[in-house]
Amino acid sequence: MNRNIVSALALVSMLALLGGCNEEAKPQKPAPQFGVVQMAKLYQESQLGKDGIARVGQLEDKAMAMLGGLQKDLEKARADKNEAEVARLEKELQSRVFFLQNVIKQDQEHVMNVLQTEMKKAFEKCRAEHSLFGLFSDEVMPSYSPEVDMTDAVKAILDADKASFGDLPSFEKPALPEPENATPIDETEVPAEKPAEEQAAK
Image 1 (cartoon, rainbow, N blue to C red):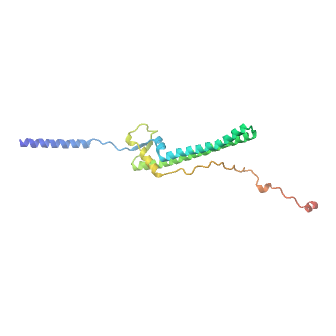
Image 2 (cartoon, rainbow, N blue to C red; image 1 turned 180 degrees about the vertical axis):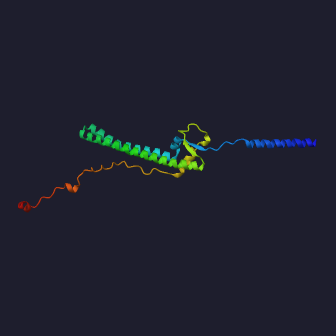
Image 3 (tube, helix red, strand yellow; image 1 turned 90 degrees about the vertical axis):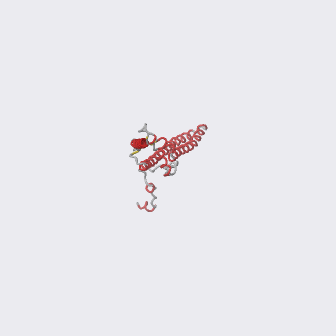
């Protein structure tokens, strides 16, 4: 009887061991080799992205305020039927609009260059920290598992670096450059008349 009990206990122990072995033998989920970043979320929620959007809006508001003053002057000149002033202000307004558009466009390009440079550095740092082979944007990887989403990790790196875009560009129109074929001032001076004695001698 005791022998049967011992045999039963031994059998239970063996089954338990076999069960444990089976659990360890189950294949584990492989660690991610690549990551995916949600670009729109990164632009909208990172501090650098928010600063870039705010900067562009600030420039546009400043430009509209400057043009608003010229527009009011133009409307007054039209009401007064001052044709000469209307023509001058229309020309000035057109020139100012063109200038401000160029300033804003150049600063938008500057903002985008800074964003792309800082994001590239953050991507590389995130890739190295998580031992990944590479990172993809969600634009080229529309379907992926949640565990490979590295958006928050990249955002944390961006926010910690505290990069900036620098000072706002000036809206003051620069002076037009002097034409290359302009005659130097010293060459345009009228020569002084010769003394009367010299003229009489001739």
